[in-house]
Amino acid sequence: MTAFSYQLYSSREFPPLIDTLRMLKRLGYAQVEGYGGVYGDLEALKSALAEAGLAMTSGHFGLDMLEKEPDRVVEIAKTVGMQAVYCPYLPAEQRPDDAAGYARFGERLAKAGEPLGKAGILFGWHNHDFEFRPLPDGSIPLAEILRGGPELSWEADIAWIVRGGADPVAWLEKYGDRISAIHIKDIAPEGEAADEDGWADVGTGTVKWKEIMDTVRNRTKARLFIMEHDKPNDHERFARRSIENARRF
Image (cartoon, rainbow, N blue to C red; front, top):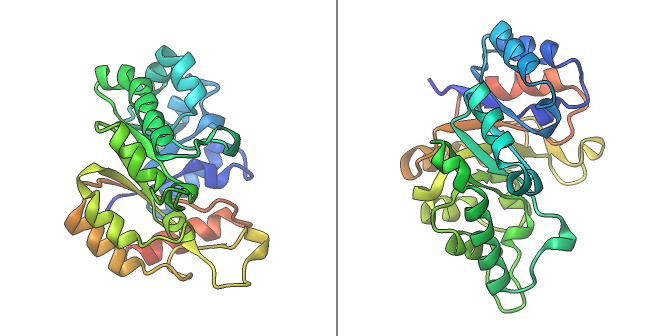
């Protein structure tokens, strides 16, 4: 049976963290993925994870911290036992406008990840939708990022691929050897869930998860399967329904 993880960003509006961790354990999650909002008190985080019986197998860290505080990133990752770290985002005002710029960004990411690699921790990029929208020259940003940083791993956020207008199965098949993690989330039918930014509990939306998970298991190196919802109005409902449905994929 697949051991599912949970991106704690999904529960950022439902403190305290320890209650979220206990809920996730009760629902059958084995792992969690961290983000910037949970790293402040490292010993408290380690203690809460131990109390709940969960492993923090991966985490998101912003590029600024990766470049300016690499020792701190490694310390956090090592303290809680992360296997993988992903850089999650590039603000719109910092995005290149051509293929060469995205390739250079891939190089920059790879350099930022070197301290993690030396520490035995996998490092990669987590996508949103903008990486799949063709540039004026016809190139696709994600392909250029991965070309510029050939050692980068990829945490493929499937629903963002769909929102970017691309075919997730085609990308999984082409870059399967670069993919170490999958973000499992769903998109509500058109016009629904406006108060949740159009996202849905996994298995209740429009993403073809059965087909996609077959491809993930057969064509990629992904070992981390992470549930996420960017704006749930009830995080326990999302966590419960999603893991129940995902077990059938």
